[in-house]
Every structure is written in C-alpha cells, then in structure tokens.
Image (tube, rainbow, N blue to C red):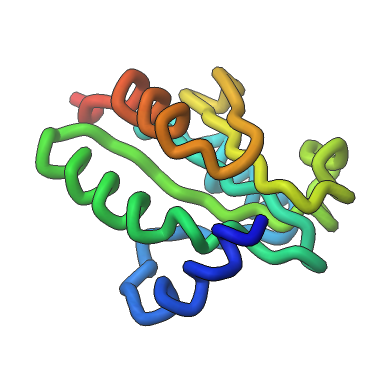
Length: 130
C-alpha cells in the first residue's frame, strides 16, 4: 500500500493517456470483457483507496516495449464501487491486478508484485489481430 502511494506523486507527471479508467459496468464491459485484441491488465481499486500509482512507470515502459514488439496490452483502472463483477474486491486496501484475454479472466496478482505482473504481461501479451 505504501509503495503505491509514494510513487503516485511522481507518476502524475507521466503521460498515462494509454490507461483507461472505468467506474461502471458499462465501461468494464466495453474496455475489458469485450476487448478481443489485447491482454487487458486491470488495476482494481476501491474509491476510498485509489488506484496503485506505484507501478505507473513500469506500465508506461511495459506497454511501449510490447508495442515495439508487436504485442498488444491494455491497462484499465477499474473502480469497484459500481462494478458488480468486481464486488469481491470492494473493501480491500491492497491493490489487485486481474488479467483478461478475449474477455476471460486468466489470472490475478494480489499486491504490487512486479515480477508476477511482468510474467503475465510477457507471457500473455497478444499479437496484432490479422
């Protein structure tokens, strides 16, 4: 929790326009469940705690690396308060990262565990749709 909060101030200066932010089921459906051409990494957070900004630099560099390699990754920040599909994470201060491919949940990581997140990203980033 502390690591995420400390790095948030530094990360605010970075261009994070590639991160999609959703706060309702319609946005979650559109950006996560209906996404068929990318690995979707969802940073799940409760409104009272905020998203995990501690990994912003990694996500920024990781998405660029994947694009250069011809692989597709989408980062979504999902506020659980109004997304029924994520209700089990609602009152949890620890960040959770969920990994989706073609609308299916393929894995999750509890907490900002960069090695595990990197493994999911590099193993499951999707090649471009032909």
